Length: 356
Ligand SMILES: *[C@@H]1O[C@H](CO)[C@@H](O)[C@H](O)[C@H]1NC(C)=O
Ligand SMILES: *[C@@H]1O[C@H](CO)[C@@H](O)[C@H](O)[C@H]1NC(C)=O
Ligand SMILES: *[C@@H]1O[C@H](CO)[C@@H](O)[C@H](O)[C@H]1NC(C)=O
Image 1 (cartoon, rainbow, N blue to C red):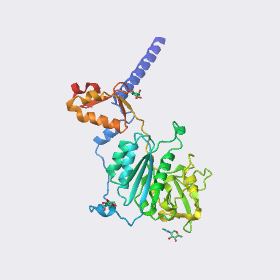
Image 2 (image 1 turned 90 degrees about the vertical axis):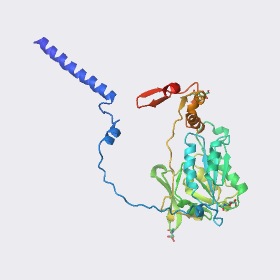
Image 3 (image 1 turned 180 degrees about the vertical axis):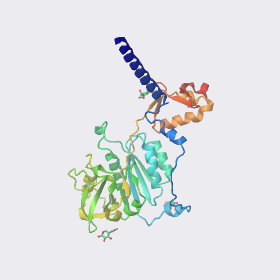
């Protein structure tokens, strides 16, 4: 009796273990879809019943490129100051911003780059926009090397110096390379007499940073970080008429207080501020942030690939990837890379000519 009972237990145990291993095996083979990896594939195979609605179609190109971009010399020039620094996202961010600025008449783009050399990538990009521009190399002071803060100060200071030495009139605006800007903002800030202010979206814990307006005047501010600031606003939340840019205007190396101290250095009062964007009720600029991309290092012998005549284009793509700083490519170190072919073949890149 005892032995039958034991046999029963062993049998149940064996069944249990078998099931466990089978499920584990299937899951690994992705036969059983336990973690939803293949839902996209499955939903592609299944006919989808989505009720869509056509809302509006406009086939007319209503833009008048010539008129929009030609020299409208009666308009005040906008000096758009962009601090930037080298990283994998730098060129894509500047491309996106540049393509916004290309729609704006009478604009001069000042890019101040936090690196000691004049980046060819940045210069090429500036040239391709066709915009008037100033390209400045403005590395941060040595004492701040290796620390993250305060970023962008030496860049903005360098741009201010250039403005003071070269420009008599116009409107200046600090727009970071990752901000998103509505084209209407440019029409609005062009009217700035002294200092104008407007809301900035995606800031801090309130999702917005903005002046509070009463009877068309700025009376207070709505911003989740007071920080003992007289003007608790974001860098992208104000524009300044260059004639009002006093010789004392400067920006301190003080993280979080750059905007406030800069506005204080202009000697402005609350009463001087001109609210824009429908009395600060609309959002025309956002503090968007691109997720940081960790630059991968790849072990690829580009020289070898360059010598394979049929793979010249691929070798050039690898060089472009490295040149734009999206990946480090070294012949001696870095992660291994593979090439994929026919859904099945997954072979080291070093086998390039024999595989394909
Ligand atoms: C704009 O002005 C510049 C310099 O004043 C001139 O060289 C250029 O031809 C003008 N462009 C157009 C489209 O009028
Ligand atoms: C802003 O408010 C003032 C005072 O209420 C008003 O006169 C003005 O028309 C408003 N401006 C806009 C653009 O709504
Ligand atoms: C790989 O070697 C290069 C020099 O050949 C060096 O600059 C780079 O930092 C190295 N990368 C890694 C991940 O060790």
